[in-house]
Amino acid sequence: MSRITETFDALRRAGRKAFIPFIVAGDPDLETTAALIPELARAGADLIELGVPFSDPIADGPVIQRASERALRRGVTLGGVLEVVRQVRRAERVPIVLFSYYNPMLQFGPARLSSEACRAGVDGVLATDLTPEESAPFVAEMRRNGIDTVFLAAPTTTPARLPRILEVCSGFLYLVSRTGVTGARASLPEDLAGMLTAVRAQTELPVAVGFGISTAEQVAAVWQHADAAVIGSALVARLEAGLEAGLGSPDRVRQLGDYARSLRGGGGC
Image (cartoon, rainbow, N blue to C red; front, top):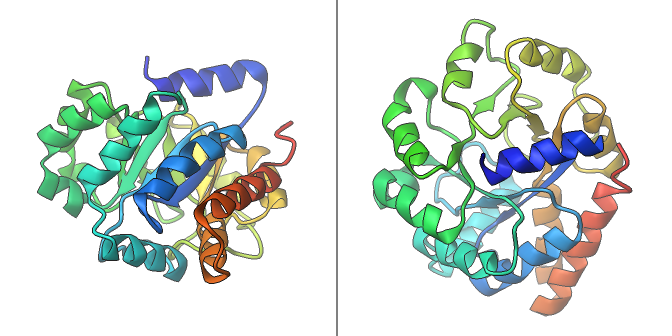
């Protein structure tokens, strides 16, 4: 059983839902990322999505695009991200999912990625633009080392195509709450509950909802229907604001941890 599955099983037994923060690795540097992961765990993160910076993040809005650009200017690579995971894994058990695009993973080499990610302590990978129809070799490599492969479903995913996604998905299913790119929104889609009902009719996998979640109230609303809420752009924007304000790294880390706690709320759902 993977660490991701263990976490969701434990949460289910406790009657709780998961809080999954997303940050871009290397924004603004890998030392800060290494400090942020344990801080987010202390703030109540049940899993952490660690974004691998990429030059053409087509699913991401301007906030995460700028974070990727900052990391790339510092020379951050997939290998460097794995080294950070290796460092923090010595003390942290929180599950970590690499959130990336397929190009960096393909250039790194799926077999090499599977082996090195396993040794580093990565628990899952999500290749945003890898289609299920073309994923079999990649999924097989990840499975060889017990790494979960998380896939996306969207409001435009048809009932006929969802089973194909579920065939290659493990750990949890990431349900995109709306069409478009990442970024904070003022409200959740009105049909979110219906979307989740349709998905749950076809799988027992935990379902995490992301894209557009930016307040504690929205997190709580997602928890009413889904197994997990993912928050990314709101956290990345807060980190960016700290940079622009000239805060030092310890203060930025502490500020982001406090903000994550406020978003998570009491976690009583």
